[in-house]
Length: 301
Image (cartoon, rainbow, N blue to C red; front, side):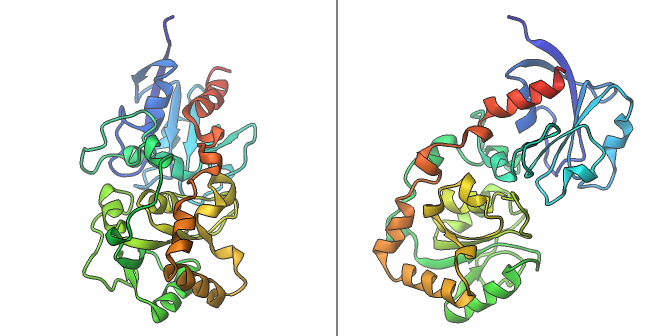
C-alpha cells in the first residue's frame, strides 16, 4: 500500500539538527511519504527557538499544522502552536514525550557520526540489559556534569564534595583533570561518565513531569543515578534502580545513604541488578508506534 504524501519542515531546533535525519522525520517515515518543504509544508515541527529567529512565525498561514517539541521546562500552552510534544500530561493538544526519549536509537541508525543529533546515542537493547559492571572498571566515586548554577545542585554538590570528592566534569564547580568538552548531550559525555560508581543527575528545575536525559545517561554508563527533579521519574523508570533525592528528609540523610552504599558492594549490586525500566519493559507511551499514533491522529484530522 502506498504511503500518504506529506510535506514537512523543521525550524527553531537545537544545533546539529538534521532535516532528514532526526527522530521526527524517521518516525513519520514509518507511515508517510515525506518531502522536505520550507515554503508550504503540511506540517511544521518547531522547538524552543535556540537561535532566537522565531522561524515558526513564518508559517502562520492558516494551512500549515504546527507541532511544538520542547526539551526545556517550557509550558507549551504559552507557545503559538497547534499541537505539542512535551513533558506535560496528555491532553487533546499535547502528548507527553519527555526529553529522555530523544536519546534512544529507536530506528537503529548509525550512531558513529561525530557531533550528530543526540537521537542516536543509546541503543534500545542496551537499556534492557544488565548495568552491573566489575568494580575494577569503576575506580571513582561520583561524577557531576553541568554548566548552569541553578536548582538544588547549587547547594548539594558542594555538600557531598566536602565529605568525599565529586569529580565535577562540566563548567560548574570544575575540579578535575577530566573535563567534558563540547555540549553535554554528545557521546563524549557518556565516555567520561563510565569510570564512576555514582552520578549526580540533577535537573535544572523541578517541574511536574519534567524528566530529561540526565538519569538515562547515568544508567546507560552503569553509574547509579542520584536524581533530583520531578517525582514522575519514578513512573518513567524503575524506582529501585536509582537514588531519589526526594525520598530523604535532609541532605545529610541522603549523603549518609550514598556513602553507605558506596562502602557496601552488596548495596551497589542491588541498584545495578535492577532493570532500568519497571519489569524490564520500555514504557508503552514512549514507543514509536504510540507516538506515531498520537501524531497521525492530529495530522490526519
